[in-house]
Length: 491
Image (cartoon, rainbow, N blue to C red; front, side):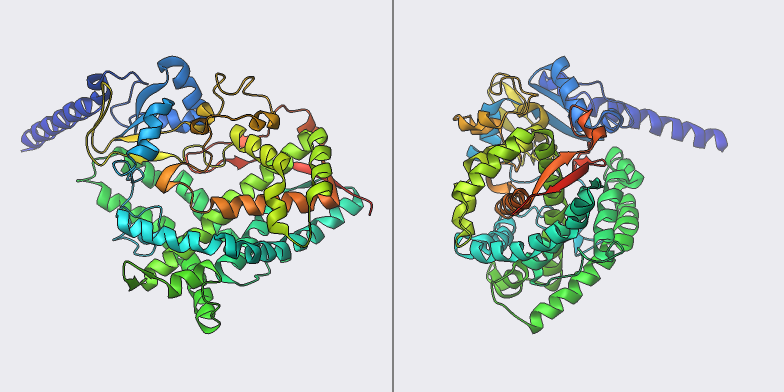
């Protein structure tokens, strides 16, 4: 009996091994080179060890502009071929409309599964994105700017004691609170005491917990490496219990309570939540789960990426004091307090400074990822259905053919008419970052107010380094401690 069971198990393992070897031979059949995948984990261990940025740089050197790797079982073609990227992201975006499928969370967690970045129905995605973008039209931007202004002025007061005392402090923490304050005001129309609370606000703690657990989940790692039809449903459920029940559910409850407040105090179409509550999609009102899911998306994604970008901007201001003075001169000349919206648009040097910061350190380095809905040919290259195309932003945006001395910080390079295909920190096409306009407005406005009130100095430790101390992941670039000292400007 035991021998028979052992024989059956052995045959099963041989069949599994053979099928996986065949699966991982896909890129060889397509004529693409790439890192050798493990029969157990694909290239996921290599990617986890190196981080996306270093892995993409190493693989580019070894395999050229276009190559393939496996994120667990999922085949991904990485490319800096801009002709292919134009097709994938723009011309034939309807074929590559969806982001790579990882977890179908619709069953384990109905709220998380309804977030706009997880949705896979094109009509539904377009309808939901419209609700977001309509909150940041030109006609509404002035109100958004005033909302941001109130939070930014509070931030300036929060950091003022450090400037008066002449003490260095870790700047990402108050910037996270600023970003959360702004996002809560623009999403929900509520000013939460996140900037002035002595302890870390629970809502900030929950957002950071979700980000950390989603990056380090061993359950997700296993589910990515195992066949979907056999083990993934169970692992998905475990992942949902660990991440979502412990972190997402408390956040959703808090967001649900805030939404109830908005229902009682409607400012129709004034905030993102008002748009979600009162505007129809596909001829119907959004369900409660859809409203909460997309309010959570706006809140979580908006605060985290904005905070990282602001931290990088402050670092660059301290690293390049000559640019502080250039920007301050431009602000003195062009800033009009009576029309902040027009003033923000007029600051061309500030645009270049922010663009160069995002070129060197895009906040989400592996953000641009599109899955083929059907077999697709690009010249002699076949992209099979279900295979994803990924843009290695940290490689593409440092291409020496387009950006001479690509590792140097030189905002003036954006004074030239650079090819847009080589710069896409917010993505490109119909699935680009829906909050780009909001994020850039916040970053510009905060930078203006910071430079009007303070001079930024890096700590001695940071002055001795050549680049910010970064932690790289597939979702979000995170900074380690960025210690700065603020000098209060006279007048």
